Image (cartoon, one colour):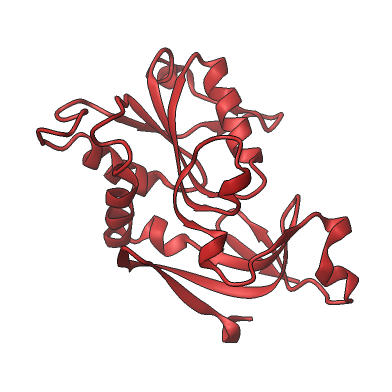
Length: 213
């Protein structure tokens, strides 16, 4: 699969690059035609800082933010994003303010929860939700339900990749969309065109990577 891989750069910042692998992939809910390797953007400090700078733009002068809630391994970006949002500047709404960065946990029922000592960072606070990618919307829905339970006020959602922004229930500020990746498609397992053509699965996508079958 890697021999067919290609890269896609963010048009307004070519230093932000995503590695893309075509194939027949499955998640717990869908089959996909491409695997997007976002790990370098989340773990490389230099890249994460650049990503944070881009993601901060929609909020700098307009949105008061108390806490950034990070999902899917975006904590490094979240820390830089808090730095960008609170930097000094006449047009920076959060200049000089403290912005906390937290990550929810999964309980035994796989429900998102916050530890008791971090609940105060969510309760009646303005929350920016940061995720790696949005495809089915299940992660976003679960996270928003969690924030609502803890009385948090979601004032923004940001993602590195949003598969289908035109069908998203919520406004999501993202770096990349499926329009940036030629022929990107997502299918429910029973409607997968690759399965119907007899093409076998190449790999299973899970958090942090994929496993070949």
